[in-house]
Amino acid sequence: MNNVEYVFKQKPKWKSELESDLSQYVSININPVMQYDLDIMKQGVIKDIDRDYTYDVVPKELEGGILFQPIHRIPKGTSIELNVHNPVKIYFIFHNGCDGNYTNIFKKLEGWELCNTAPQYDINCTWDPEHGLYMTMYKLIAKPGTYVIPPGENGVAADWACWNLVFMDI
Image (cartoon, rainbow, N blue to C red; front, side, top):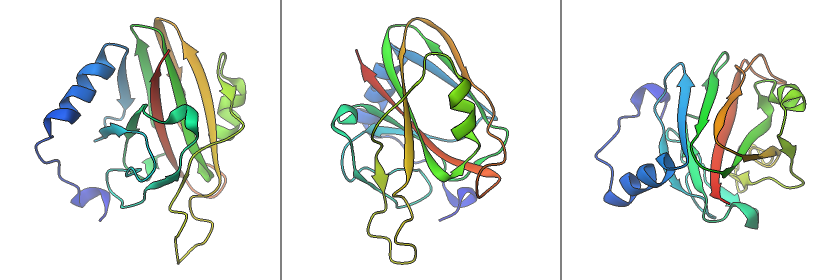
């Protein structure tokens, strides 16, 4: 399924509750605006709204968090503004190959800490055995305020990025 074919269906009540819960902590503004969904971060959860890839390895610190599921190929130039209302842990996870240059961008962002582990997706992929194995994860202990993740750029292997956000209560 490609990005153009994806159509939202009515969300189940528990997904609407996730949106309500998350809105107590943070408002997310993506520019340009894109479709997304939310789910609970756990082994087997769907990674992106327009693919069947699942997170197969999930670090314990992410389990039970709220996963922000965008499209798989996020266009170069996409920026993220996070308006934090209450303290929250925010994780930004990106693919090392299709990194949108976040490898370099995050080295310059104040307050973000590089994590020792990151989730892995699509670990049983038959067409590319390393497809979702090499991911990088940063963590921010966010206090109320506005945090901007600059627009993605040309990355290591593509002019798009592959990323997710996870939000955890402190």
